[in-house]
Image 1 (cartoon, protein in one colour):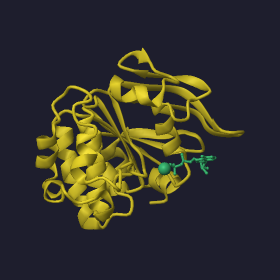
Image 2: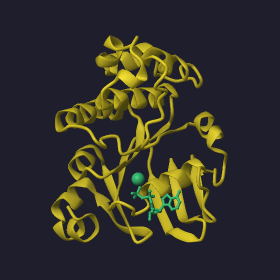
Image 3: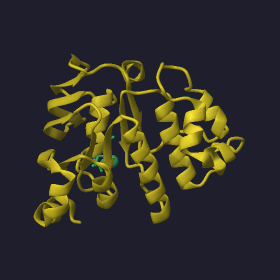
Image 4: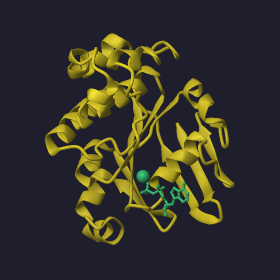
Length: 230
Ligand SMILES: Nc1ncnc2c1ncn2[C@@H]1O[C@H](COP(=O)(O)OP(=O)(O)O)[C@@H](O)[C@H]1O
Ligand SMILES: [Mg+2]
């Protein structure tokens, strides 16, 4: 569904991604792992057009989308949840959701995301700013789902969350996966990522240093120590 071919991405003169290639197949959950500063967010931003690569290609459903405008991505079927979560703190939970509901046809509805996250239904009249970190994360995921993407891209959905909330988010995302959603996930939380993902890529020194199945990386302590510091 997504193919990233040898991309080179810069911030000013800093050559951050030095030939990153990866693929995400339909229905797969793929995790992109790497140390802090490895370039994980930059890879997602390259895909979504926020920091277009200077070299290389990005294909979505066999069609080249390299350098397409970020606002065109949702219509094409890519939904990106940034690390900052991107919810509107001054709007209520329900307003945050109805803002994106119906923009693109597909199976996810307001009722559907409330069923996935009952907590959000309870909190629907609350402002985004009154939510706990976990609730904000649920709202951000719910918003992404309401865009009815074919590829859901998540940047560190567990960042700053308590272990019990992390487990809850993982179980909800497992249901999303079982619904057939294709997911590209960036994570620092190795356990979370390897329990959810089918396949894993490890980013280091601006390039992919390792790739394989979740089971393979769980068993490979050398890779974990060399590139993740787990
Ligand atoms: N807006 C920016 N301007 C300049 N350098 C940046 C910017 N954002 C990130 N970087 C640098 O790019 C590198 C990769 O960052 P990032 O993709 O955010 O890493 P990760 O998400 O893996 O933690 C880091 O060295 C970081 O300091
Ligand atoms: Mg990041």
